[in-house]
Image (cartoon, rainbow, N blue to C red; front, side, top):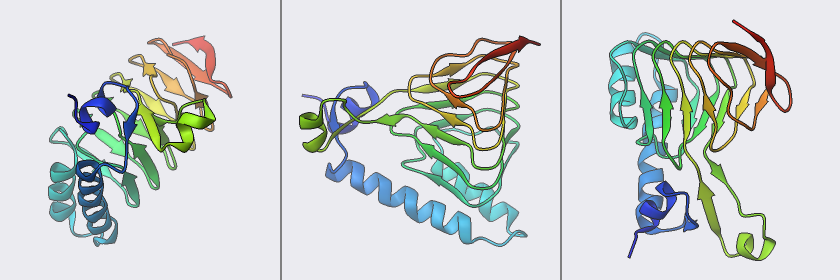
Length: 184
């Protein structure tokens, strides 16, 4: 029988109130709290916290507080990650961030979602689908990346966009819903 975490990572209905998941969330909350209260000069402390929090992170990265996530351990980032102020990553499923990814202020990445059936929703069961962002991607301020989305490499997502479907590589895309504007 699968654990609630295994169900969560398999994009199956799971109970977020499961003790293992609650414990993992508390660990992430403690780490993000320490990160968000750290002083600007405490660069090494911030690096250590992010390395404890994320599932993996490249050697070169910068995250500007405040930063929030559900678990942290489901975030996998490669080299040269830059996350600007007030980013939220709901990593109830895996979030892959390629090399040279730039996230502007207030970018929101949501793997979590709820069932459409109100009876199932009332039961407390939830769902989560992975998100993958390729290399050399820039996501503009206030953009929202929805569950199950893949953004191809060398792509720019315009500020305020709501990305509900996959976006190919080598394009500029924007809007609500986000759509390809032009090729790069």
